[in-house]
Image (cartoon, rainbow, N blue to C red; front, side, top):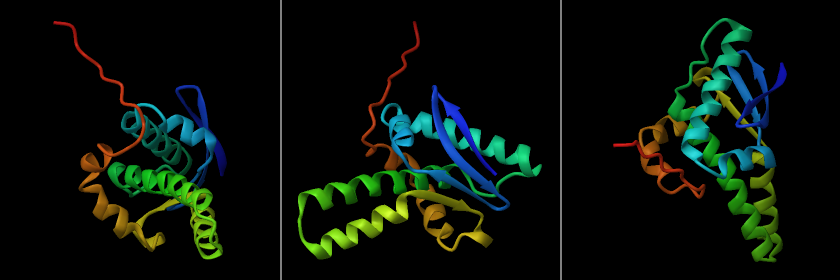
Length: 146
């Protein structure tokens, strides 16, 4: 089922299937993650899991951390490939970058039995907090009053 969810007034297009979700990797997603990336990713993951549960009456069996690092891996790999493509004008590099960009247009996040590379994202989930420190989005610091 194709649908969309709103996070901080930004509409993110998703598709829900049994055992797998698809997130459209477009300007809306980039805009969402441009600021306070870690918190907004957590909000996105949470909202997707709620939508999945409402549709299938069961939890998506993928950890929040694994989903987050997979989203980051696709969003920022896409940006890097586009940057390389525009900076270097070699046909081989262009073709390689184009393949990377194509593979990142839709982020497919599935349960282990339906996602052949789930083990990669599950492995990276254990270092999510370290990865988050390298994210390009502006971080919003929240201080509590004394």
